[in-house]
Length: 282
Image (cartoon, rainbow, N blue to C red; front, side):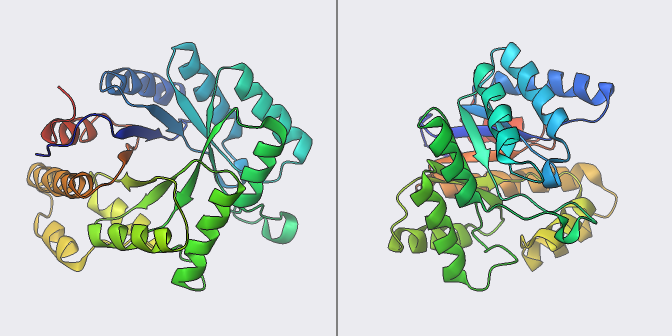
């Protein structure tokens, strides 16, 4: 439990479904999660904008339901005019928040595309749309796997804030000390905007282990060993991981984290149970 009050930022992230069944399920999921009164939802954007139309469709559907939603956005292979038209479309739909990212190169594109860094995208949006959008960017408490050094990565984040970002959402992590140290080092570099920790509940150990190895997010060895102990006992594994992530969130909030951003994987649980355990929702 935590004695934190409800003035923290709370947000939920979805990925755009590819099927009608997935879209129907997501509609039910967001209806339930909206009862927890998040500040906003976000919807991801595939490598090089590969899910652009799916993302746009989900965003427009959620806006039609009156939900506050932030599209993830990166340049991908689009030119400036295409980007302006897309952002205008979001603005017309009532979107007032964007998660601005460098994005990843689609497989097989090689040198056919040039990555536009997040600070450049932030500056581009500010140039053409002023202060209309609240802009969130990505941060990496355990440092981006492509970064040449710890300090360089923090200075990249500083560049995003200097370009006009309002806040940062972090990659998920399971060691709270990595977040606290990161925030301290960011402050030393002059970063004043809120850095909101990203929270990834664990529902499938094999999937999260594989993804973590690929993206550079560390699962501490003791947690990996404990999860392996459960084998096929999903009920015990789920109980352990829900308690584990609840304690992580409590530690973060009790020590000053400005909010929580949940990577829901388009599921209601265990996010709802974790927030209930924390006393943040009824």
